[in-house]
Image (cartoon, rainbow, N blue to C red; front, side):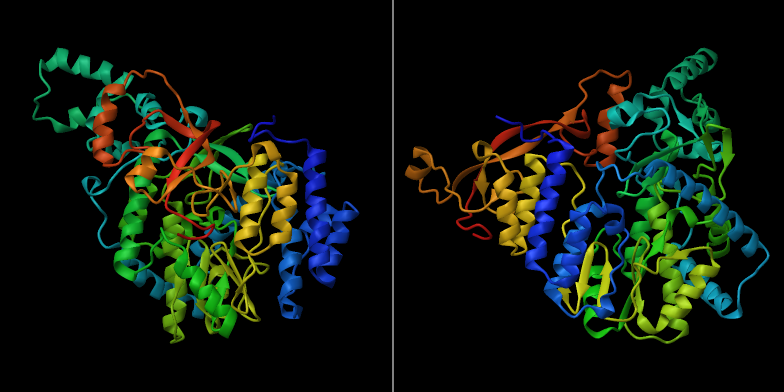
Amino acid sequence: MSNWTDIRSPEESLRFLQEVSSLLSDLGGPLTRDLSQLVASGRYVDLINFKFDYGRCDDLRDLVCARQVHALFAKQEWMDLGMNPRKVAEEKFWKMEEKCAETNAALDACRVTPDVWKVIHLSRRIIKRILGPVPNPKDLTFSFGPGATTNVKGRIASPRAKISARLACSREILPVVGRFLAEVPLWAWSSQGGRDSLERFLERTGSVDSDDESELIFYPEIEVHAGKLTYVPKDARSLRPIVVEPTLNGIFQKGVGGYLKDRMLRCVGINLRDQTRNQRLACEGSVHGGYATVDLSSASDTVSISVVRLLLPEIWFDFLSELTTGEINTPNGPRELHKFSSMGNGFTFELESLLFYSIAKAVSELLDLEGEVSIIGDDIIINSRGYTLLTEALNQLGFIVNNEKSFWQGPFRESCGADWFNGNSIRPFYAKKALSEQNLYIFHNYMLRNGERELANLALSWTNPAMRLWGPDGYGDGHLVGSYDLRKTRKLRRSGWEGGFFDTYSMRPNRINKRYGADWVYPSYSVYTRSGERDPTDPDIVRGSCGYAKVSIYTLATTIFGC
């Protein structure tokens, strides 16, 4: 019997995708057949590079099927397309660095048009109103993210591992790191350098009760690290560059990011934790054309130092600058960055959201436009009549408007993972992983939920009959959504319970069962963050999974999609 998570051969994975494409060709129209022919002839690069002209699409069914053919290959991580995704990502990263350097020079020389100066001036006022005064470290809630740091590898990156690692930060934060460490004194004392310094301090004073507060704050020994450039999967053509931050930068950046989220919600009603507003407005824009959806290319990598200095109050620019990592290690030695912050920085997402919202809002107010302005990261929504001025302002501030994914005319809009054509959702299933039982279940359930029974049945035919588990929707994709029977024990029946059990596959969390020198600090960290990290009851959990198990779930659901 095969394993539920076993990856099948590349040949088998490709054959499945070809069968799906062939079936879509039968279900769609001329456009679908053209794209399916590219699959049949092995012209996968041409397929991935195909651009849809939504203004010329008049057959909704054909468009849905054609986009699904395209999505089968657009983001595949396992296929060899004759490209070098890492090289593409590296070249683009340094190209964006050159772009940031040009932006810094242009803004320092004030090379912007009068209309854009008006946008900048109003944007500054909007940002100042949102940010308010710089917070005291005691007003921030610090917690670790799930990723790696410069001295903690991703495969063991739990809060316990980070607490036990040597303290490390960038050179930018060194002058103020004591103020932040004063908020987490047990962590500082628990580090190896902290313990050594504390012993020397006690030998000298005989007590931790001292009038010299700065002496207590600055005693840990801290390593100075540059950032580490790495890459994560993005799509079939390229990887996504990430700068891994030092441990201290990471935790304090995340605290500032949370604060910026709260300010955006409190002051202007933008909830950066919820994408539904953007999705709703994109749907409305596809119906009446009143809203434009604007997307940027390499948004995080084009937030230059000068654009942040120009738009933020000086005190906030200085505050955030102290938490950044302005240097990364490369094979040719350390290199200074021209961008303000990159992906990997704990407040980059919130900062870029603040910048883009203020620019879009300023355009809306200057043009006296009706309707809402909404933002999630670099997904911007504004009245369509503001598109021209908005793109002009963004371009002069060093950002790159992605014209392939920005829409202000016609019947199509996309934002935050929702694609709409005349009010109809046409979001396809993006196949990313090689074929496995697990991925077949996900594909089957997606198609069934969207009413594509032929495609769901095709996926079902590829699954192992001996491993099939059936159950209701709403409980994940560890089972096939479909007709099922609940198991009822004699005790349940005698007690009058209406529900019963069904089986599903569940991934086991990945745990690192290892003792760390600073484990005694973790309980205070867990209390401080109130809910702990990924699993509040298990501090050993790290990213990833460790096999799977078949588990039983009790439910009252009596039909596939409802109760």
